[in-house]
Length: 261
Image 1 (cartoon, rainbow, N blue to C red):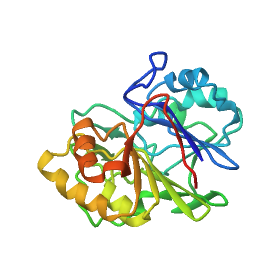
Image 2: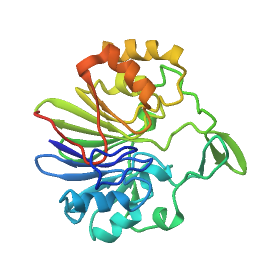
Image 3: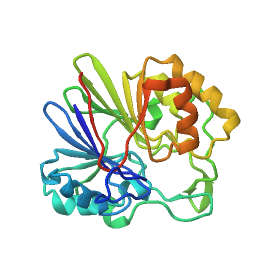
Image 4: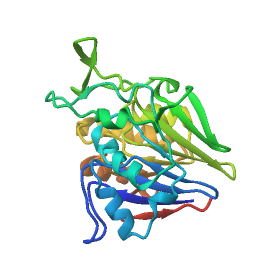
């Protein structure tokens, strides 16, 4: 399996764009999957510079309903004439950050004929490739909304992140999990799926330093290899690295990860 980072907050090459967002192109033995599309069409520009053809993608997956993961999907739909974009049934709901700014998705995207809600809590895209909604993950560890909200009727309420979606790929008896921001809690997600490899953001960038030892010790208990970026944050990454060592790695725009499964 190969995982190409099309866009992330930082860049590994001067000719590639960095922006606050995430987009990964995953190549399995039989499928090409776009996992998120950053905040803008810049992910597609990077893909072209990396020699990657988005027109050959079989399916796209939106990890959750925030602009920094779905903002480039309209450009993807222009470049790819056939791929569906799979999302949570709740991805189109309004979403706001702690300052009250709208961080949701444009109606032009959510009303597109190829923007499709997953039909079940666990949906099979292909043999060994499944999508899992947030409701499948037990909340053993608390997951504060950190000021983010959604609308229920006309009332702002704390976001419960029911719009998250996780991609699980199983090859040769190994489980590789993709999570865009892990708003439902990186510990909850890891404990539930017990993946061999986990790729995505951990959403620890605003976690107080005094809480990081608990997170690091809990992650260390799982036999998981972690690749993280975007919303994890440098202070949290550096702290986790001191505990997880070679089991924790980062990636950025232009990075490619080859997994021997």
